Image 1 (tube, one colour):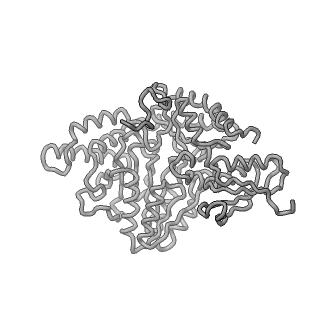
Image 2 (cartoon, one colour):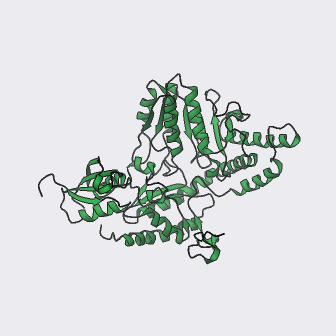
Image 3 (cartoon, chains in turn yellow, orange):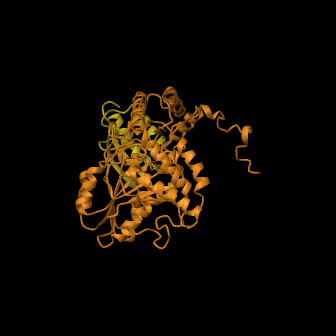
Length: 90
Length: 399
């Protein structure tokens, strides 16, 4: 994986707390410094991903509302993209 | 009755446990059980105060006397004049009418409404509506990790030109955090901006400082009946009531005299032993804070010291709030939650979100005056197992 690339966890369509659980599961065996991006349609993930990162010693480095993917979502759902940089004690 | 989806008495497997004596209700914020003295007062006032208090006959005057006595009693607790206090149809409508009416009266000063980030939804929505009606903006001042509003930012915002009014809760009913009310009120007074204080989670439990221009309170929160609210407006404050032409401009059509009377009696009763209840419930919530924090990956939220005596909230990582509320209910314990999956909307508690704490797996507890030490200990005995079971269902071991 090239520098700056993030591991992507697709949690669209899942409700809280599943996006955070998928993110945690994907991050478990990754080295510190890895960037992991989670995509979520659940509004709670916007708050819970940064809170999880704080509790686990990771850093939230990016948050964005992604233009809905018309093919995948019918253009109806807001998709949030949150990226964390994994800390040493994950 | 043909609706087969309704539980049908003892035949439904989904019926909740019927041994209500063993139930422990820990979700008393905004809806505590009726105080025993309020029940007595309500029954008495149903007999004596059923008539229209505006009528001139004996029955009407008797009702009017009960209502006046109720206003006087609430005013005494608030340190207000009797004529500054009135009852309304409810807490939310008191907040809304106070916001909209003050903004209207202050339109020459400007249209902006400044509010704290963890105000209840009724305040946030009414502030937006009031600001929009006067072509101003609703300015939301942020809070820290404990839910305490940034007093400096609040002061700076109200000092800017064009502010009609500001609103700040005395304490937050979801997480218990007290707001820096006196500091903020000094700033709003200096700016000449009236401050509406939401005492809906605190009056009846905590001393509300004399740091308000308008104040709304919630009788059902302190053991009074539901269906009645309190609105106090200092005489120096100008506010346009929602129905100026009505005999009861702030509660068009009038309020329930028995409900208002029982609300006042309940408030007097809570004041009488407030100090003892404060100490007792503070010890119990502290016990909950320590026990909850000892469960793995549980974060107790809210200001640890400068808080309401009876409210405690925590969030459990990797826990479905709805599943946890249901699991605890099955074990006999009723708790609240700010998690999205427990609400009718998809949005989680804006209070938890504003604080930057976990919104999922949230448990909200407000101890009643009747909650015993044994109730709390039994709850704490089942809590770790309940959290573990709902986590096991999601298979989150090792995360």
